[in-house]
Length: 366
Image (cartoon, rainbow, N blue to C red; front, top):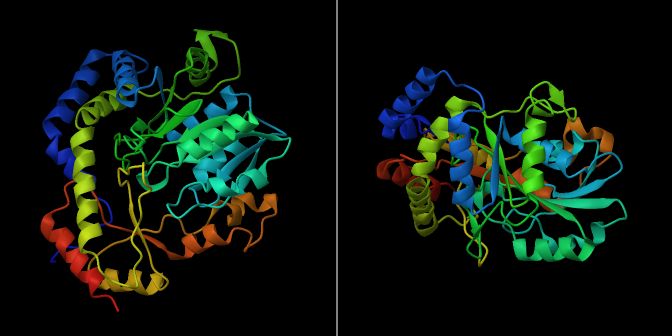
């Protein structure tokens, strides 16, 4: 291939829907309404309907969705929240910003929370589980729900990578008390800047979230709680409404790309991703594993193919969480994944020739 293949391309979706996106941006600019106006309200209604939730509340980012979720649920200092050890660090920040303690669990073969190890983690301080639907695949929500119900725990879902993914026909984000979404530009449903939201079936939770996102104010200048400035702005909401109209077709395109990888990648040194029976994936990332990952990265780079590691440092070993006192070796599965996972290019607008070249190159790696 003449040109370097990036691990992700955002311009091709924009080019595909350029007229719609630019028309919407201009409409919002001309409206004179830029914060908490009709575009936010419209997106909230449409995204709630898309997920099958009762309510959606637009926020400034996915991280805000996470930490505000735990804040609204009253989880804070002295409380423990179980979360998988191989997630992105923002998931854990959602817990610790509130003063709560993350209790790490090992991931399963599908990179999501391993339900079989959860019983050993429960203490009198355990108040919630954070289920992360990593790389676009739904977690084992049947097992997680059963565990939470048994121990009377709150359940928050991190759906930053799973827009439209389902478990047994039901969308991620609709199983727990709150589903948290990021609309960062690289997400399957991406904005053109930072943006996020929560979904819930609980009217009180939705109302509390609306208050917290707007400086803790239910009525202007009358503040009920110490809140945040976390409002989804009108331009991003409008652009998300355009993208949401096309999300089903964009998801099917990614699934077709993943299906081709699954069919045609044949290299005994490279382990392909699996999908759990009863779950599906929207393939936010196509993540392979290779024991010689550094060698593979360098090989692909020389051939003009970019890759990304999601994620090279598990949160329990990050400098940010050194105060928790975890040591290398405590979570061997998560740490093995950190040392071997590699995201190869998958993006809307990828051409057949680009993907064919990637497949040929990966199959030739020795």
